[in-house]
Length: 200
Image (cartoon, rainbow, N blue to C red):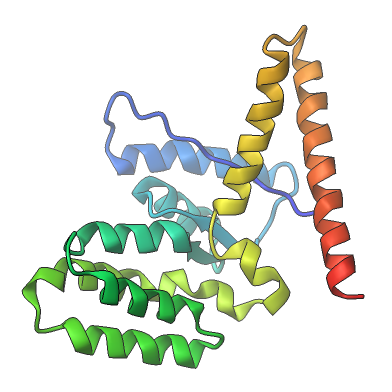
């Protein structure tokens, strides 16, 4: 069963990413003591502190920038009006079946909008983060839907929260752990059955 760790930053003091990365790195190092070593891929958004912590703790591990967050970042910098074609071409890039097509479609998108100043900020984000966002393509095709973004773990967290809110007050910590464990086991069984049906 895959091991999943979730890191949440509550930065009420507005500390700098360099300071935050030290705390996150301590959390990651603590995971080593539980047996996590040299993961092939770490998936997260582009939080600077988390990026630095991952780079220092997991030497040689690929970092996958969340595909969904990345596209959202790009679109937030694109013009609000008349960007339907831009979005269509961006979607084409990430819907491509091969790395070669992804890079080709990206090049075509950049070429089409490179002379339009209102798209420069969006194109810069695309250029700067593109390679980090397609790391998942180096892994088996049946895994890519799970490792290209953090969406599936976010949905799982929402399901845990939904089940937790039904109970509202737990008598002790262990009862909360049992509920979370039950939700995770149910999810794992759902994924297993889905793959079994797809593979015949």
